[in-house]
Length: 394
Image (cartoon, helix red, strand yellow):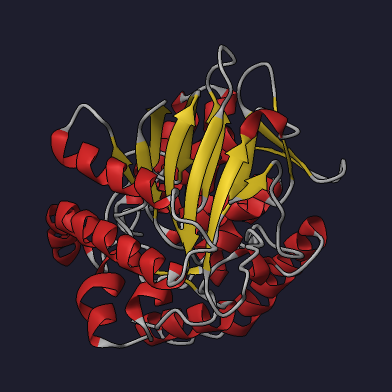
């Protein structure tokens, strides 16, 4: 079993570098001794592999874009493939040690598109609603799975047929997890394709754009402050608080109903809230106007002359900062199916709204904003977004 005391990223990405040995058997058993990490947490990262873990001692808190769960000693869980996550130490009364099975889903599926893949693997690894599956020993059904996860660590690499035994044991665990996930998988049919349609009920929405905000922000060096807020600093060039950008994004999602109904609500909010809150509400308007000219809108205005004049003046005189620009960018990096290249999003919008005369100028401005954040993150933001190239248009 490999001893882990640090996290290693792929170059220019938040993707964890996984040391598969041999490389053609995509599985690694790891003993994470978390007290030896530089910080009392494992920073945000993701990997194409599935992560099964068992908390041998200590207590850990797992964060994903939409969940926060605590795992005491003796508990276990699964982090789905391609899910952004981080882990925090919760106690120093005992050693914080975690045992992990990390494996590529192909180890069980055999090949992409196989019968096993279609029936049992892809339904889970492609389910956006399944980020983190908790397993606690006080629940008999879950305790049985925990026992299986723990027992696999006793297999010896020197044993004849070790690879067969690993795959067989992980397959048994997977079937039990699959059975547990069936209720969640049924929800998929009700929510698939509705990420961008649903109103956001909390700052941490499930939308790909929200996840993109967190991933790109997370590229900046993360420091846990006394206030327990994540401050993001890119070598002094930019400072963005994650909790604040979530609030901004929440306002954008919650009040962005349609062009005909939202303007008055935004105006009233902006006029009545205090200055800091009004700055948050600003994103409701600014996200759609990367070019500060009301005539660059691709929507239809059905508002009073007074409201139109308010918006026109507001847009022309607003002073955009990195919060505005980050939401503008991430809104253009997302489809209902996940992250996407900007060009694919351009096509998506053109199909739905046509190509008015301002289209090319809007494209150029969006690409300019991407260049800005490429510079701030020290590389292409596409490297931070899993599946950005392969996401289907619909």
